[in-house]
Image (cartoon, rainbow, N blue to C red):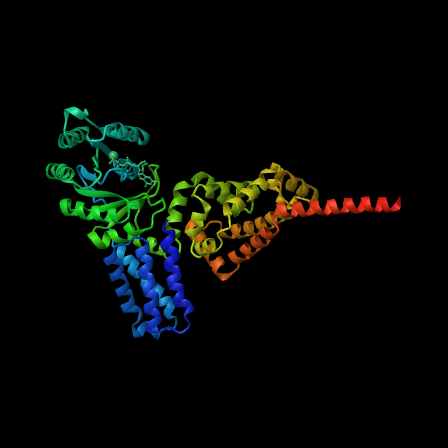
Length: 494
Ligand SMILES: Nc1nc2c(ncn2[C@@H]2O[C@H](COP(=O)(O)OP(=O)(O)OP(=O)(O)O)[C@@H](O)[C@H]2O)c(=O)[nH]1
Ligand SMILES: [Mg+2]
């Protein structure tokens, strides 16, 4: 997410850090680069201009220039201004304490309305509020069917009427009656039709639903991939409907970030949620501070923790916890943990969310943590279950067998065993801590250099210089040479 801007902003800001003595002139030059980075990310021109002016004003002030670390202060100012740009956000959907809360979803064609209706319903259901989905898109032929399929997937009722015998307003009104009759429905989510462009017909239809149903929340679904078009459509929808919030979808894709950074500043409407995938659980609250952190390459531990809490199997965690406490953590448990971590998403992305790790990943595009994990898993897979439980008793012959079985070098097996021992000790020390405290601990260790990620990197680099295949080739060459030497000697003897 936002790789381009993260890179260009960091390089703009690092020009400050590298400048040696900071002067007003070189700060202004860096700020020009910051503005350029924003524009390249497709941020609205006026927004980028204002942003730069605000940051520059503060950065060239006496207070900053005379401070101990002016460069850090300036990064701090940029961080805070990014937060101000995207926030504040009120995530609440303001559900009524009694009765039914109606949420109208609108947006351009293909922005992700129907999918997001399903995501919201799933989220509300998990929070204990029974939702009902309403198929108010009578435009697109398969729209009703699509919503029904989604409803089935998440086990949520869908209200619909035959397309050619009704109107969107009627469907919504009847849905409300049906919801009242059902008695236990708390939220009505209206899936409305989209158009290719903002046009009068679309706006009229939405205004009619708005006037008759008086939804409690009007949410605009925007496709982040469309950049400034998304922002312009948000402006048009807000003028007609007074939006309560924006849901920015497809942030999992290769977006430049312009929409996320400009929507609030241009329309005054905050982004409440973001869609980060096609699956119905890929909806997250939008946190400007976390997003600002990510954009500045400072990581996003909070989101990682939330994903971890959602994806990790609680029972399994508890079992591992117990083993850790008793110091019985085995390689089998380690393998299980690795598999859990894989569920958090591509490792490169996971690393970027850990403060300090993002930079390492960026600076070393060849680094492939997935490959490392695969290799480690391969080694563990080649062990017997006795060996997994008793890693300390793996002797030379076992080690050689495991290395051959997994296509690695004995040294790789050694390294894994050594790392595992270190990790198991660390984990025993951390047993009983919450995930959050554990992450903090890891962060502390990383910062103190005890678990120097660069050391790991240096090892990796050395390894890649003479990777396992290289070494095999080397050995083959040596063998070949010896063979030839032997032949030669034989010849000579004759
Ligand atoms: N990657 C990704 N894809 C998404 C996300 N949200 C929606 N999509 C995809 O975007 C496409 C369009 O989604 P829909 O929910 O049908 O969009 P819509 O706004 O209802 O479209 P219309 O009803 O035709 O106006 C589908 O293929 C979705 O799977 C997201 O957050 N990430
Ligand atoms: Mg739709």
